[in-house]
Amino acid sequence: MAGATRAARRLKIGIITDGLMERVAGGEVRIANGGVGVYIYQLIKHLFRVDPVNEYYLIRFGPGLLDVYRDPRTHNVFLRSSKITRTLGLVDFPYARLVRNLGLDLVHYPNQFGGAFLPRSIKRVATLHDLTPLLFPQLHPWLRVTGFRVLARPSLLRCDRIIVYSANTRRDLLSRDMAAQNAIVNIPLGVNPGLAPGVYTDAFVRRYQVPRPFILTVGVLEPRKNHIILFEVLRRLHERGEAVDLVVIGREGWRWTSPLARPEFRRLAPSVRILADVPDADLAEFYSRAAVFAYPSLYEGFGLPVLEAMACGAPVVSSSASSLPEAGGDAALYADPRDAESFTAQVIRVLGDRELSRRMSAAGLRRARQFSWKRTAEETLAVYLSVCGADPAARSRNGDGP
Image 1: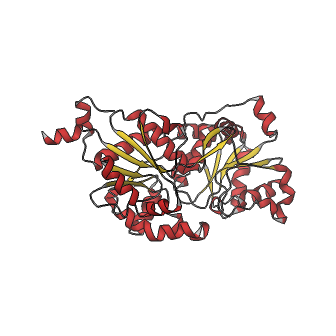
Image 2: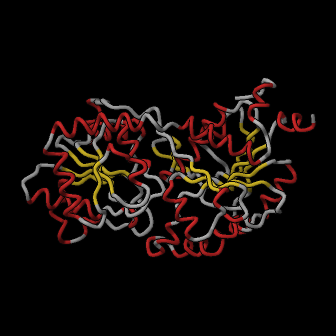
Image 3: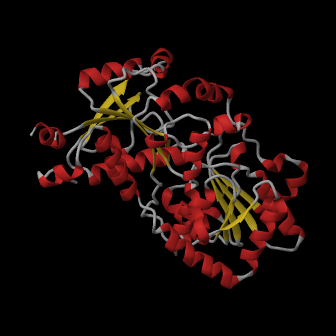
């Protein structure tokens, strides 16, 4: 009887949302940090839809402006933001106090790791996006690398569950002995249902002036994304007489310098567009209009833009590194991200073969339909319930199930 009472009890779940960064553009609040921000936002939004039972506390330093903080299901906990309080946050001091004061059953750190200094009695879940600061320290700021070296292992080893997006990240964790095998749960990301093929408007053409066929890439502008190889691909295509442009969409990140500043690429300037602030509706149209979506990243924990492009019908040429073949499956073409000739050859295959492009577009649409944020939220909720010793079946029998 006591077990049934516990199973049916409403849980109080805290989610640390500092990783959901915000910016205001054109009077609209938008997600500011690419895949990590999209994951946290969509996870929270869909948890509210699939779980009408439990209580959710969104915890962050400073106020949150996005619509998830205005949802009637939300309990907002906005901590005072300063250098001192954020430093204390690294050692979990404010979170430990909140857990006690609010009576939280579980804390989820959805941006890499956390909880190394929480009392052992507190249940905790972390979402690890990737281990690139340890695998490729030269591609990250020194402070981030130091944080990983000092905090990642003790934090992850104390987590009750670690959510990863891919088998590749799971292997990275186990090879470095940073987590128990039975603590790791693979939960793939989803695709925004607002992304769909065939979005074409006259206003878009007037706004962006992209009449020629173009190669598209989307992602934060930083060395790990390996944008430089696409400029080399474009240069080689022009030398072969291909009339094609390159569109790069992404906010400037760490150590970004436009490749157009390099002497060998300066002549490409009229054929290149680099855009930072693109509304979601326009992003869908860019994906839909792209002759090919190219993603040459050196390393990814998942590679969400690959699936977003597929959801809009764009044929995809992707890096063969890390987890990207898990995201794209058989629907994409792959190339070594350090081999410009190989990448160029794959792009030429798509540009020069309309039937291949059509088949890849259809295969990509089928592939993208396999990934949903609803599934991501449902499987994450199952992790919460498991960690807290709750039985989803018992909750459903009591009329409390999602």
